Length: 274
Ligand code: HPA
Image (tube, rainbow, N blue to C red; front, side, top):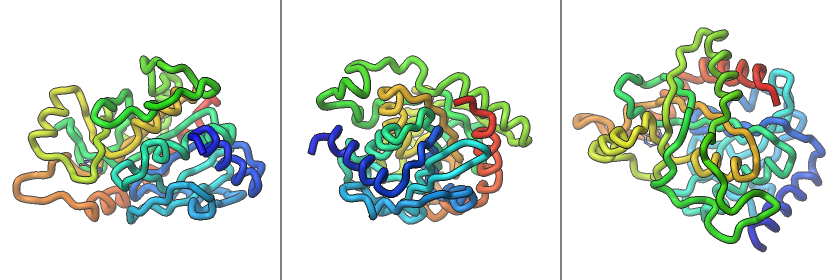
């Protein structure tokens, strides 16, 4: 099966279970998946039920689609995603985004846990993603272009849609959430970064680092979706000389920021014009 057939086949499998048409596709990152349990769900589908669909091996990632109403919008939520470092082909890492586009979603709302690079950030902060650096991972559009999806050489001049960013900023004000803003850089992971790498990323203009998101945003832009994203800063990237960084710590801080995060995502979705 080529990638187009694989995406179409997955859409077909989902269509055998639900005819729900989402407006917004929301991807919930590490430790941030709780929101999916709180929506008025009309249907849930475990990734494992879908033949050929990548299933996350990371703890803290549930691994299912939840379809339903969130603040008056039809949404499909990915409760958990797969990452390149798990060993999946890049085409499989971005397959779910293409599938959600195939189901009708016009907006992609990405969330993740990330390490803070900007020294004015603190663990627990939420950051609106304004732009991305994706040059340290493989471009997910390598390979034959599917012309039906988009251009061979898509412009990346505004990956994170201005109108959606404004909607999120306005939501933060309404909810009294301090919202940082910045550039997100994706690495392949799974090892965290060294202090020297963080110094390099800072000099390149990055404010936060994580192991997901930019490749998903790239294929979404390719397919004509509007994209926005929020990072939960769970730790200062690179750790410190005296303390090693751990996935447990990342999940713990994401959990602690959960209430603020959920409030902000809800209010943002409500504000979005799709
Ligand atoms: N680096 C990369 N990915 C991450 C980090 C980090 O420090 N924290 C959470 N995800």
